[in-house]
Amino acid sequence: MHTNRVIKEVLKNSNYTESFFFELDALKKIHHNNIPIIYDIYEDDIFYYIIEEYIEGVNLYEFVTNSKAGRVTEDIIIDYGIQLTKVISYLHSRVPNPILFLDLQPQNIIISDNKLYLVDFGSSITEAADERKNILGTLGYASPEQYTGKDIGKTTDIYGIGAILFFMATGMPLSNKDAHLRLNDNISQKFKQIILRCLETDSLYRFESADKLLFQLNSLKNKKTKALLENKPLIISVAGIESKVGTTHIALLMCRFLKKSGYDIAYEENNTSNHIRKYVKSNKCCRYINGVFKLDSLDLIPKYSENVEMDFDYKILIRDEGVYKRDKSYGEFLYLISGSSEWEIDNIKESDIDFDNVEEIIFNLCDEHRLKYITRNTGLMGQIMHYIPADTKLKDEDRLIFNNLFKDILKGGAVCKKEKKASFTGRFFRK
Image (cartoon, rainbow, N blue to C red; front, side):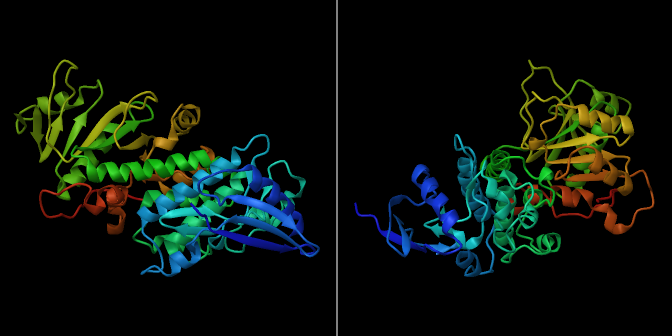
């Protein structure tokens, strides 16, 4: 089978020559399905020449700007984001010298038959190279540290991936990332969180590796697929960072909100507290039907013995997990509940929580000032957080925390409603 080839030429006395020498050496040693094959290299008195695989397609800039809406859908962005992150992970894992790409921008990415190719390694260097301070990147896609020449490393490429994801989501280079992302209703809240974490100005708050970012992208893709395809209840787990932080109370509020919004839902107790049986024991209005307590329009499933097999036909289960345990199996989405006192914040710092698998953190009996303090002092930058205040004087627009909390999970036909959506008037506040 014949493979088309292209010749890339570089003027010997150009400013590009030094980095070009690295490109020759690096490309001869790397082999990846998303990187063009290098066949041969030669030179004459004026030029260096690289003979490499020709990839027929369009660069990412043309792909996005030629799209119907001038941007692409979240599913497509996630797919290409996963491909790109796998390439960067491969380059970063090269032994003995990891390779930093350092110029992730749309013109350096080719799209061909739904496959992404990373091309033009002209700005690439090894992680150990002394000249890292001289790599500027491309305006609108380069990280802040590339303008200062300090702390350039693997997280610089993480920023570049975030800039590429941002471009696909908005159709424009990075400028005011917060404003632009809020304008795009085709991007879920969780995906916005991932992109914004990549784009943190301080590299310490970005994903620490391409593998960590890849885990998040794959997790998001799998959750979306599972919710749409599996004929099983969607499990939303709610766990407390410790006991007595209001886990059961908030899980019941979540359940009540979704029930009033028309979803086929039940609360399930998955801990040893026995709260449900205590709750319904003195309530004469409670009915018990086929293993479910029915009270105040809520369906409540108590904790049953492992020897008891029960089958419940609901589209969504809000599962009260009690206190978080790292080795416990949770549902498709996990929300952590915490108090906001000083000792409870210390417990978060000292905990063994796998935050990569946490959807969001909700701080009970908190306020906006306190939440900002918590964000700065827990090392959880990039993690989405909400708070539920003790203040009873809330504005109407502050009552929609769970609308924002669940909109990504429930949109797109992932679960079905039983009745027309109703309004919610609970007391909640979102940062």
